[in-house]
Image 1 (cartoon, rainbow, N blue to C red):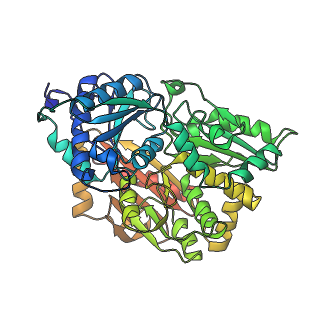
Image 2: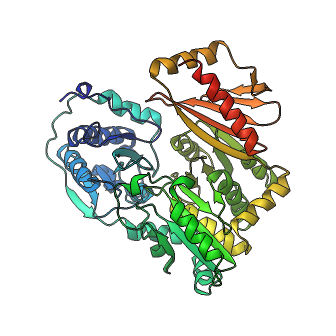
Image 3: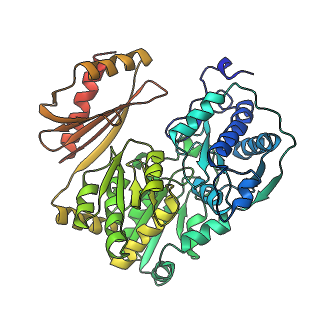
Length: 491
């Protein structure tokens, strides 16, 4: 069936194609997209040479999945469609984090990986991510090539490829263990100096951290629940009531350790957040500066810091403390991955939870981030909140941040707002003069008091995304409310 007969066309966003199961995301459409993606992966990466050239010469593609509804069945359909197109397939025999499949693609010299996951979206969604041979998200140019071939018939394969199963966990856990002082973290937990909570949100990180550490931790929501308790597997405070309550009760109990860290993983374990001992939620706007300091000082690593346009101003200020250069990209980890392929990048991260490192593959990896967070806590002997406060003191900078999404009536309203911002640029926002506007991705307004507001639009739906960082939470909300009211005048 032609793709145009569906209500919503197949379109790749910042990290893959997602849709509502049985409405947009169907077995038939996956069977159509998967072999086309494999063909494009071969065109882009098939002629590259490496010590594992055997796999590429045999046209191998990794196929993986998370723990969502029908994820295994969709992965099987994708694997068979790719096999029938003449490619050899390594199909996972279990759920695993998306970065585990990215690592498998690089380690095994495959053309790339196709992963069935909808990341942090609610349970009615499923999706398909495409990973390159280098072990990270493919560029927009690659997904555009995939989209351009949709609806075209692939030439028949001379003969089907092979289809084998594999377990992605052992190699993945082994490589992550090698990145940190695993013995120090284990020892702190065994000796009762460190207590680790991990909310895996019913997702693909389930059991992963304990397996890597080789010791028991306090894991929450480790069972499979495709409905995600009626919410979404996104590492945001509103989805973490159990974790916050358990940590609060533990800290007030007599058994509490000196060091207590809560870690949160999204549905496919490529995004992370944390909870400090006192119950404070810590997004990557906070964690990335802490990790920059840890990697640059205790580990002695160097390299560029890459941040997206929505990243906190604290990131470049901390980078400056350690003479690290900073590069800013549009939002979407694939832009960071592209930079990591061309430059020596110490750390690259985005405000929504994705962080990657030049010590590993150019891919955001929540479990590796968790290990570095725990290593920072153990080696410093300080909880996350204290580490963050020290950085605020050193830089003389403190701020608050928030983000909201505003649904628009339709795409026509979106177009009118874009036209207004292009033809009549804002010169004042919430009573503060606009001093600069960066349009690398949306419209990022610098204001006279040092705060900033980012206005972006979803590329696939009528949604306005608003981001703000300012000195106080009151200022943040005043700015967000102002721009929200301004946008509503165009509905």
